[in-house]
Length: 202
Length: 122
Image (tube, rainbow over all chains, first blue to last red; front, side, top):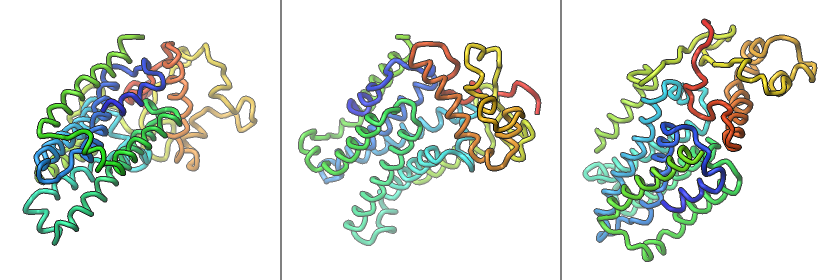
């Protein structure tokens, strides 16, 4: 969470687009950070609850980001229709993939779709990586808060590093069932700071 | 959970298709400026841009690409209409954003509805 928001502050940290816009995007960045947290909060038996509950929370945050703009800015919906920029469709793809990943991870549907636990794990990881890639392209393509090559590069390195090094990160951070509360608390704190810096300091 | 996800996705699609129950002012998508396809309205006032160099937007003054209004080419010519969103966002939004980064009030840098409301009837 810290790393994701820190990257947004590397260029023009006080440049705001209004509380509504910056607030909605702070929720989006929290959603992206949540996707990376999910990679660390693994679904090994001892952390099953942490991963599952955090997955629900991240899905909620990502839907909140989408509905925030859909319901609050009447023109935003036009950028999700045919002819919309690819980076907007990429955001839609990321949200749909996340919904599919969450829904198909739960019994009994998981058993219906996958014959073995191994097959489920492979597909789960593949779809999770696709979700992170689609979401990262959505963020970088929008070119507002992540507007420099350095920021884009760091975001890619961060996402790749978390996905590749998730086994080591799990050992360092020891996610627990309370991780979801920590995630939501951090989202609110970082989101408030993100909005305040861009709208109260100008 | 799958029903909750399906319901949320269906609700999002419904909002995109119907435009309801979105809050605030609603843009009317129409054939503005003689566009062959329905497009979003665009707000632009020359009075707000008098401090800018004319050729920043009116490239045809110096590159000899015609003497018509902006929209007669960028909206009515099919090959330019396909890149209208990209070209106008690149020009307008980048300039507004650059000014915002410099701490200058240079117009809305991001919010869609701040620019996409009609000033004139189609």
